[in-house]
Image 1: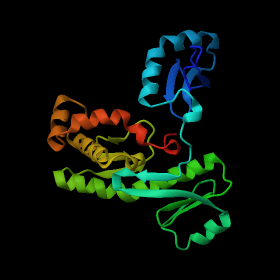
Image 2 (image 1 turned 180 degrees about the horizontal axis):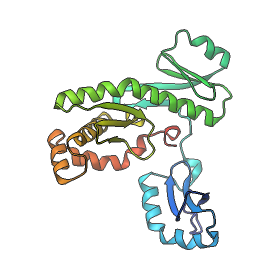
Image 3 (image 1 turned 60 degrees about the horizontal axis):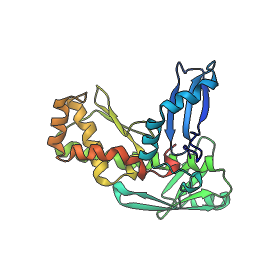
Image 4 (image 1 turned 180 degrees about the vertical axis):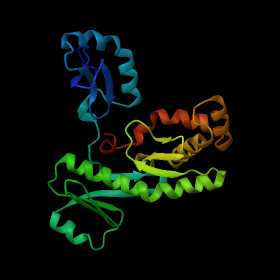
Length: 253
């Protein structure tokens, strides 16, 4: 997908008004993207990319990006496994008319800003037939955020009470680069994708952010405190490097 058979590196150039220098991004969905300022001379890029080849390869391996894009899993999975809470959901399609009828008995009703409708019912997520892939991704991400807002507060409260660490407020979002964060005022933000991780990794992130209530940095004192909460904290932290392998493509965008 990135490294071609002839030894060249495949990438997409993105020109940005806000870019002040060349920046490389690697993702499972988009491969290698090179963000450059509007006036940057594109003929300079091959040399820059070649110099970063080892870094690109390392990141691609960590993200388990295959050489051939055709071997990637489908964007919309047939099943979504919320490992953290032990629940599985099938993904199916039906007409908009049928979806509208199912709203009466639905466990969840999801409607996006584009007025697309999806329902969850009996551990199955129903998407509109014929809806473009982008619209289905939007619905599934909205569903995951909704699920996170329903489940994560209770899980964080249990961890907070078990270890006697109060916090001020919780926000659940689809954060791009972080699994969680904690502000200086004690507001914790959690990534809805945490529901897709194994339970022990979710628990680690909850404790990781709660520990920041007392230690707002990653000092030695912070890590010592975190290990008093989770004896396997260092091992779990190492496991989080590859945690994105649990995330279906529709949620990795």
